[in-house]
Amino acid sequence: MAESDAKTPRERYRAQVREEVKKHAWEQIATAGASALSLNAIAKRMGLSGPALYRYFANRDELITELVRDAYRSLADTFRARARAGADLADLAHALRGWALDDPQRYLLVYGTPVPGYQAPPDTTQIAAEMMAVLLDAAVAVEPPGAEAAESAAATPLDEHLADHRAWAAENPAPASALRRALAFWTRLHGVLSLELAGHFAGMGFDPARLYAAEVDGLTGR
Amino acid sequence: MAESDAKTPRERYRAQVREEVKKHAWEQIATAGASALSLNAIAKRMGLSGPALYRYFANRDELITELVRDAYRSLADTFRARARAGADLADLAHALRGWALDDPQRYLLVYGTPVPGYQAPPDTTQIAAEMMAVLLDAAVAVEPPGAEAAESAAATPLDEHLADHRAWAAENPAPASALRRALAFWTRLHGVLSLELAGHFAGMGFDPARLYAAEVDGLTGR
DNA sequence: TGTGTTCGTTAGAAGTTATAACTCCGATCT
DNA sequence: AGATCGGAGTTATAACTTCTAACGAACACA
Image (cartoon, rainbow over all chains, first blue to last red; front, side):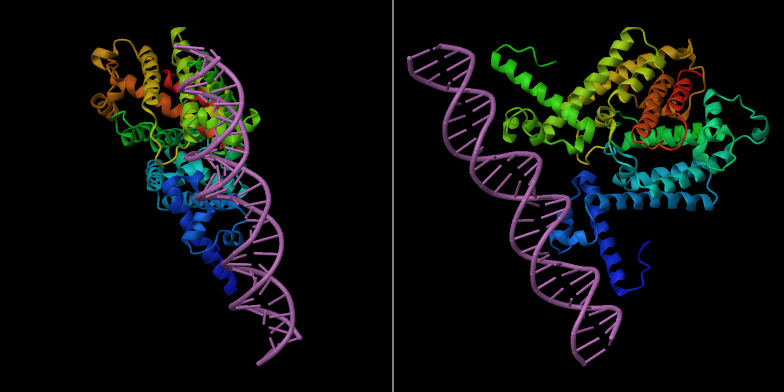
């Protein structure tokens, strides 16, 4: 959708084909995972011959990177939309779970196993930073009021460390306890989600949603 | 190591070659990830011709499954060894992190992105159950004494759910609060570890080890 | 010493990504 | 309108991959 605002008819057509390629790629990924993504198969399903796709994507990696980018954007968009609608930390957690379960492979494309040498393109880390900013604001909102001045609850060792290493918080003046909460939100919920999506809870008998909800409760002040 | 106790010389040789194949496979995985594992490349490095390896592994999947099995066993062994040496929950957490950082791709082979249709072989889920048993015992050990009878701390909604869905705890009579603690141990530490190994903390400025330590502190009763 | 199993080989089928060279259509410029 | 130039799609091809089939040679064992 982002690159469909083109001037020339050629660019319009080009953007449309790229979009169609990505659509087929997502379908393929959803059923067989990203590692099984085949440019040839996509081309054939589109009625094209293999090498034709190289007019639109330099190589397989570029296509996958583009999919990762779109996935990141999708998650950041839902986060931002929810935040604008007044969502609190618990709402964001619920949105995250919904987004993940809606298309597990999309979640795993973002947060799953990377290839060893892979370096995320700068704009995706930019998007990730935006998401953390939204998360951080929500984390600040649930901090007990008046905590900023006195740092009411005793600062943990992690708090002290984060107070000195807050590069990722940019210019957000959130107290260290909020940084810690935002970080825990991310890692704990990802912990439950990724194990659930990978099927590691299968056969254990309990409901992952309850475990998730319990972590959310713990994160939002019980 | 497990299958090297063979009778006939042929079986000895066979087991030795299988072991060497796996050794090369691990090297390849460590540098390029599991998705880039090439039977052909392994054969050439061993001075063999491609199809020769099919005498030892039915196909690529069987080799990878075997590697996953070995990884599981390795993790379960270090857990069990530590537990036997009197390790508490914090020690187990430390061992887990060491094991993961020692060979990130090995950790990701166990807990990383699976292919959609993949069903873990029964014996690996068996090994996973053993690990949970060790974890559960350690979780029971840090429960406040006298909790079993009165369930001292108020039972959370998750506790009630786990009390009714404790299939994975087998015949372990641990209180629900211990089940919850063991589960949180697993998901929270995996959350930090997997994001760290996947490089999602890169550029954020803080030290993942501190975050990990903080989660361990929270898990072991502060 | 003979016999049969197993190992390793080459050949080949059916995939994959990716490049090169060529045709052809369409948009733009004169 | 007509020539031209760029981009789309084609086929052919190279270099990979997994995996099967058929063959020869080596080795253990009776």
